[in-house]
Image (cartoon, rainbow, N blue to C red):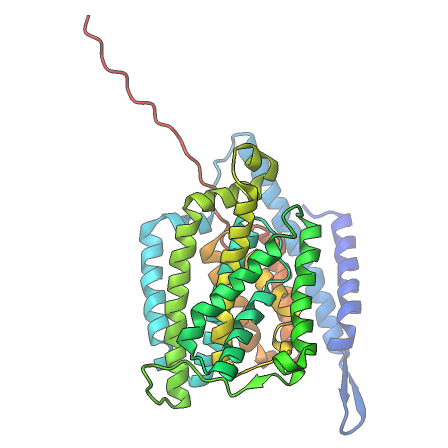
Length: 409
């Protein structure tokens, strides 16, 4: 039941949103004709929309709270979350899996080269999200400088190709190893840090790498960047631009499948269990005899490995790299993918990467408002599903007591 206080808060929220969106939604400047168009009707729509959405969110949260109270009192049984059903029931996830696989294989044959190119970018962010998910989602180490490893991979390919003529397939493992080395170099100074302090140090590391690339002109050619980087080859065959994009698309599909397999196996391995323990309670993890240093360093190194490989692919895709491609915004987007998808959830990270990268592209019809819609979508998601799109299911282990053998009397 809504109260007067809820209506008053809704009014305040509406006024606040009207104030925040006023420059974007109301004022439109035409620089050619030197005129200003005042769109007051947008102001009214923003106010009404914010007011109604706030009230809907209050009703939803009140119903959720009331249902939780009834569950605690035993009047209602707890429902299984749809995301858990999706992950656990074979009759649901198998058709979805087959349908997704067929759609992914047929995508470049059905859609245009432009759409395929966008999808390649989205798949690159899927791999980046899964890589950061190891560090942030599984090991619980907040890394705001993840883009630095991405830059290391991209510049590895650009520089090794420019100076030594090395090809894509040769540099791909080298880029991964160099990024892993940088991951270990970052991991050593932050072994004793956690939380906000760790975030600040990693943020500084990312900025240091970007500033080196921007200012060390003799090494990286500075802001001008490095161009004419060759695309991935296939046994020396000459490929047109469309064929190269098609080839890169299927290469990314293979890369995503490989990443999912490895990350899934890692999470179920001994080191994966150590990462989860580190995330839950660092002191308890150490008390259980887990080597904290090795656990943290492996998380940083393995997370960085994927960023290094995607960096090499990025350089091959765009055939040009410069420091402007590796700003903090990239780290923030990849972190958003992990948080929105669900910390530690592989399926959630994949869905979030596709949503976050494809949504701004397909919202171009909204012109100036697309980033506003994008931001509003993120806020709504975090309000209604703070655990992420697909919450990671906590593993539980039970010991079944064997029936005691009958004793002959």
